[in-house]
Image 1 (cartoon, rainbow, N blue to C red):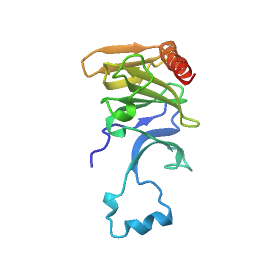
Image 2: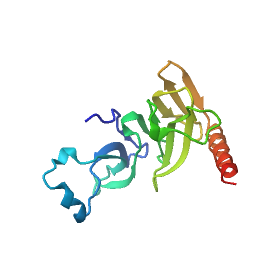
Image 3: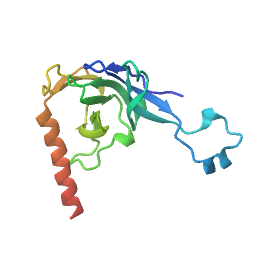
Image 4: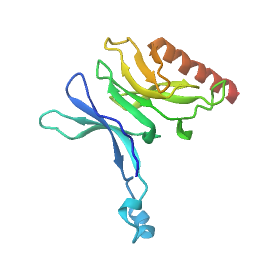
Length: 178
C-alpha cells in the first residue's frame, strides 16, 4: 500500500518528534466476528499525526495524536519555532481536502496548522491553484509560513492572511445556515 512520503520533525524545544504513522483502527470484539480469515493486511488503515516524547523516562510515548485525512497527499510536517503548533502541507488535491464553502469551485486545503497541546486544527490555508512541495514556519514566532509549489512558485503567508481566510469561511457558513 502506498503511504505518505513525509519526514519527521524534532520540536525546537527538543522534547518531541512528530510523524505521520499508519495505524489499524481499534476494533470492538463484535467487529472480529466478520473478520475471521481476513488477513491483517486487508483491514482498513488510518493515518495519525503523532507527537512522541524523546525525553528520558518517557522516550517513545505518544504525547498527542490526531487522525489525518488525505495522509497520502502529505508532503511536509514541521513544528513551529515555539513548539506550540504543527504545520502539515499537502501536495495533491483530494476529495477529503475539498473546501466546499469557498466562493470559487476547485478550492482545496493545502496547509493545516494544529495546536500541539490538544491537536486541534487552528488554521488552514485554502487554494484554488497551489499544490505544496515543501512548507515551513518562519523562524521568528509570528512570522508566518513559507511554501513552495509544484509550479515553482514561492509564497510567504502571514498569520493575518490565514486568519482572514478562515474568518471569511465562517461568515459564509453563517449566511448559508440562515
